[in-house]
Length: 175
Image (cartoon, rainbow, N blue to C red; front, side, top):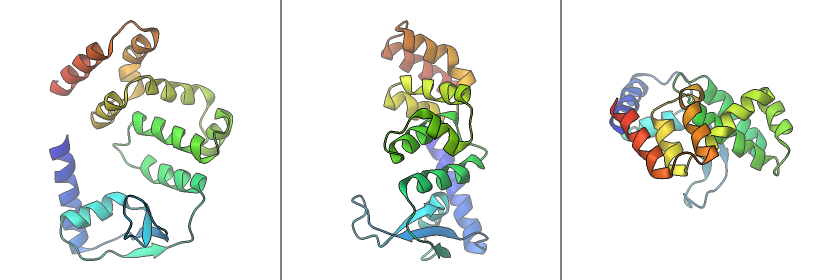
């Protein structure tokens, strides 16, 4: 999956070298991860990564006012929702990010922010029963909630140990 992702990003980088159709969206800010940064990316992380992999020195960008934490999550979710490979695990992560951005607001507030039903939110957040490394593997495999429903049900009920889940995910990766 990593090789495929890098290949996709390099192809995007080549495309950007020929012509950048859509600018990235940035806002003034700093980051503890990137202390030298003067701007943070709101929309266009994949394009920026592709540009860096391809050796592009610059990208077209639109500078906007710094968003609130909730606005940042909402905008990034909307941008990613359009991606074909956006996985249900990434959706579940976005829900938890929004909950945190809203100051640990009730789930109903999160559902309203993303215009999703209570049942869909439940489906997605049940996937958080997996360990962090298992969640990353599920996201990389682009598995949807319906594909791992019996697995996360078994995890939540204690029927499967972490090592068993790891073995199942490893086998799914091989398939």
